[in-house]
Amino acid sequence: MKWTGGEDAETPAPVTKVKKGAAQDDNGDEDAKADHAPVSLWILSIVAIILSLVAIFKKSCKS
Image (cartoon, rainbow, N blue to C red; front, side, top):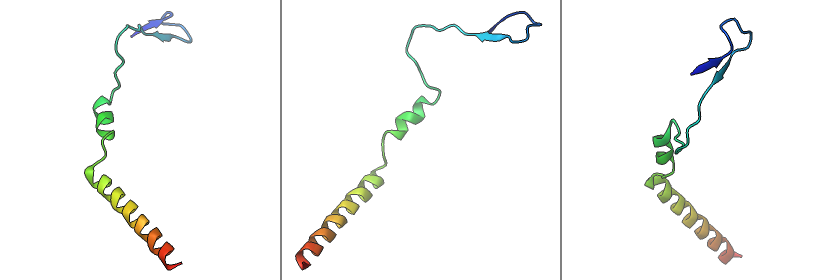
């Protein structure tokens, strides 16, 4: 990294060069893993939906 200004400057500033190319995150592998939910969460969600539907239909049949 280059710094602008002399060694005695009160407010030296860093200078970086930007190159054209594909941007890459520091934690690229972690982002890929976060996109895929575990199978157990899918199963739990489906079971919760089924139980909710059963409860709604039981309540509507009693009324």
